[in-house]
Image 1 (cartoon, rainbow, N blue to C red):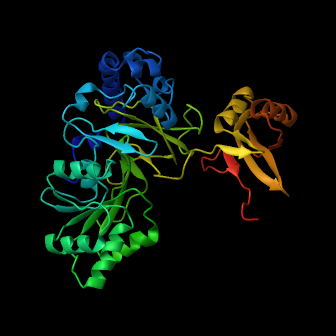
Image 2: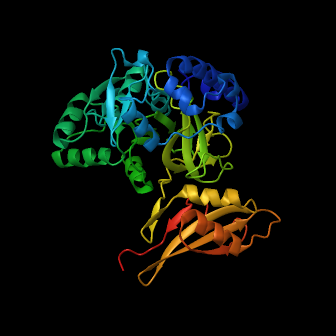
Image 3: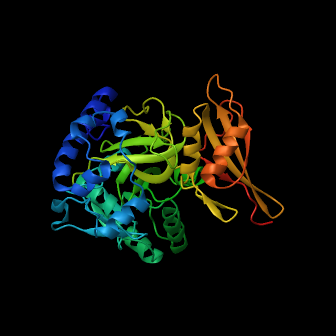
Length: 417
């Protein structure tokens, strides 16, 4: 292999887009015959018509509560798993509970290219420190590493001294696990006077790789990159690095994924660069999740990565999109703020700020006017009351003044007072 996993990573963006949507249309045509629940959920669209992002954006977003309801009504997978994926395979459980089938073929969670970008190669011995119990975490990177030609030690989680002893004897060249646990193992090895200098690169996920932690690994001559993965979808995006191991900005979207950023609580894509909820369509034929709302916040980065991979990039994990907030004993949902925007086309953006005055909750809807528009606060306030069933004041904000952090509802109440 060269410096890229395969030629797909360096396709011209317009070629990738065309080929990806051709595959999506073909996948939908096959899946609609085998998975009527998927067809019904999506509203029975013509597969050939889902040929670009504009058409995809007309389909509903499937969020975890929707998926849980479908699975409860039609256990265990809500009718969304292809029967072929269930033969001789595995099933996993995530909190909720949500049930996930393992996909088809080798590398079913599409993690091999993320491992390759992190420096893993055929012949590496990998110490895999992700959980194998009930959840697919350990299997996601295990299967990708084996598909890449690596030998995997399925260490799992916990029992640090035993892990140090195993690593000291096996001398792995690579580590996969959570960002902080590699540090725990290395520090325990120092206490035990065991040599783990064989570990030269790592791919981590399931937590934040803070700059100080990354520097700790650099100081120990270990190149550590991160990937963004979920139990439902597998590896969504991953980091790449320069020749010195320094990470390039953002994360490259996996070739198996179509990523959109939508306004939280809605199905509507936001402009590139704006923070919103990450929505993913996977081309996994065994478990084709279409417009699956991750509940995580992110944003699209412009341009291509300096590593030569031409896929779209995201900023990575930027928090949670679920901002449903209780005010005066009633919940206010981001969907309701979206309804206000639809009712007032003279508005470009809105942000509901929840605060306190003494023991009372206060709501202030900050709104940015659309270009050339002159919103009337009293009319918007009436709409707010009608939709949220709560009174609040409306303030006009300067264009482009609201923070680009994906928050539609900002709870600024001090609960410690």
